[in-house]
Length: 165
Length: 130
Image (cartoon, rainbow over all chains, first blue to last red; front, side):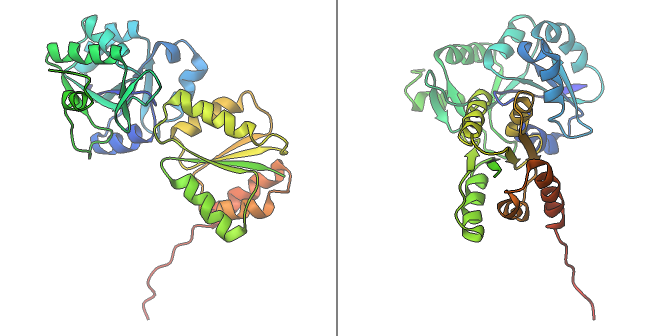
């Protein structure tokens, strides 16, 4: 299964993912990497019930993802990999998971963050992780939906005075 | 009297509530909330708060625009802990209008009526060739 979308979205599995991206890229599996959901069988079922049939949902802890992602990348089928925050995705990369491109699809505002788009806000820690991705030459794809125009995250940060270079 | 929370992506829920008051007259005990700009945890707080505002009703129906959307997921979580709460997904205007007329019925009677009215509210017309 090839993983065609690595997405950071704090709503996890919802309409934009299953309908917007789902209809465009036709995945057969969504891999949700989330320690909190993976540790709670009821929550796991809850998220699985949110995906329209015949879409399958696998819920993995980060530990499982580190072991399994590579096998998934080289098997048949099409999958999305979703995390609720940058920290989880960057954690996988730090532990050796190769990820070519990160889609930033939803990090909603809270008082400790600066908003750069209606659906995208960053904490200081997030900005550090964006630099980490840039240093590793991992593409950062800012789009809530596949039909949206791609934006450069560093231009957005500079426009808010959050980054000087 | 049954209370209602209409939830949606974007402006749909607020618009639905506004249209509803134009058709059925002004309604008390119906709250509309949107997902715009909110993450999952914030949406859960919003939904809990909306349901709490309807305390004193004989039950609450959450009308969600889409099964698979975040509010539907969150509401399923709340169903575990709250009595007198029902989630109905994929609402339409016929359903909401019927709710305003039947909401004085007990929840157990009301929900099957609404389900039927919502489904019958969709009608298809085609060109008639003479």
